Image (tube, rainbow, N blue to C red; front, side):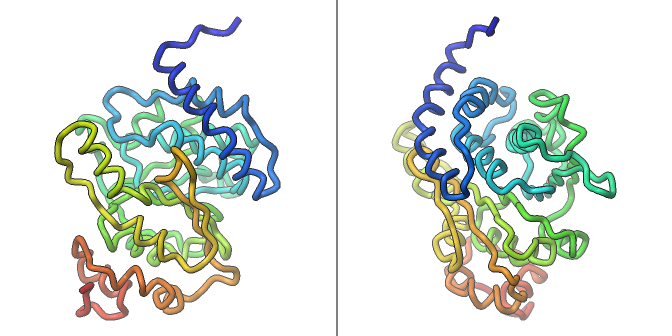
Length: 291
């Protein structure tokens, strides 16, 4: 006997039902079968804890779920964990796809990283804590590390050939562009990368109009990277228009080649200074910066 859904769960399911045609189109592009039943169950289930403000919305969660179903990665790199809402979705998607939760070296299949040790929405909660509330039976499939950025991970994860990454960290330009450049040694040729908040300025403006208040998160970093990405990319449609998927070429470019390809993004006015090491990755010289 099915448990009756709460009013909030019913509302999420209705949103997911509107997303289903977009899911079908996305999956058809990969030759994957539709899975309406599981997406509807995902909508009923996906309720981050109250303290997990800012977690991805239910439609973005469905997009993430579809990506895993289509790419079928043996391992996933997540950059930007916060509460762990998206981490929980990745784990659920891996489980539903029948993918192994550990690799040949007994490492968790989902490797999640964040700069901060505590969640920004509740400083009493370590990053990733929502996993243990939302998907405790799947938590053995993830490793969460804090105190690192993409600048640390490019070297430590070099050669691990992640076929899928999810970048949802610092959205200020040029950080998302810097993230993919720095992570290049860790990504497989032809790897797919999910980018969240690819239309964050528009989302911020809608929020301000709706709530009659000003917000500080008009960041253009993910938007600039997605809009100028010169290789294969897929944008979510409808309610999923704030999330997208980009793909590295195969064979993989060198850092210099990718930096040149991303020059249209790099050369846009920077919203923050990524520091000397970040400037070196972006420009090839620690003394240069965005203009």
